[in-house]
Amino acid sequence: GSSRSICLTYEQLLNATSKSDISPAPPKNVDISKVFHLSVFPLLLKFLSAPILEQISLEPPSPTSEPLRAGYLYLFDDRCANYINDGMSWKKTKMSVKQVVFNSEKNSYKLKNHKTDEGVPVLRRQTWQGEGRHAGWRRHAYMLIVEEMFYKPEVDGTLSVNKKLTLKPFPVLLHYFNKDDSVPPSPSSSSTAAAAAAANGDAGAQ
Image (cartoon, rainbow, N blue to C red):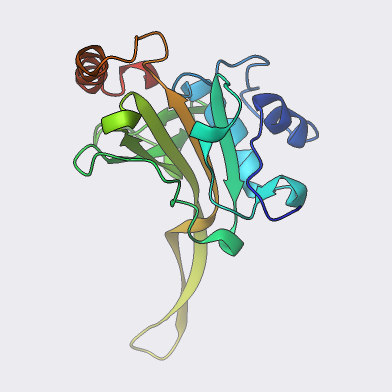
């Protein structure tokens, strides 16, 4: 039926935005078993800006019960507000939030890691690290940050036009992947791999 979670492919993201003018142009092939490189950010921005109804999941995802794939992508709107209830175990302390900023002078996107990184925030990426039997798993949620106009009453009774950046909770794109797929499932090796992954942090995203 329609009320289920729909696992998307990178190709579907490309096809959904094929008529858009995306600059810089996104790569044609991306390994979604790894963290998204900054070259994919403009595509995510376009994809979330004009979501396709048929690609939106209406039930929380269950990537661990899907057929084995390199990575898993799910799109949600506010009809599935509990999309985060995926039945997986996530470390409470290993959650991080970063903004993706767009620098119009350089026509480039990047993760904002330092206060000196210049650009307008366009996306928010929230990341989780799996624990226990889900050690090695990663969950990344991408949301739009949009510029909105608002009117502010001034002392003299006039209204001034102001701009503010607003985080849009929906639509949201979830990206799941497992950093430990090559590791045998013994407690010692998976915890070592998780520790190594934690030490590496977001190195792959730079």
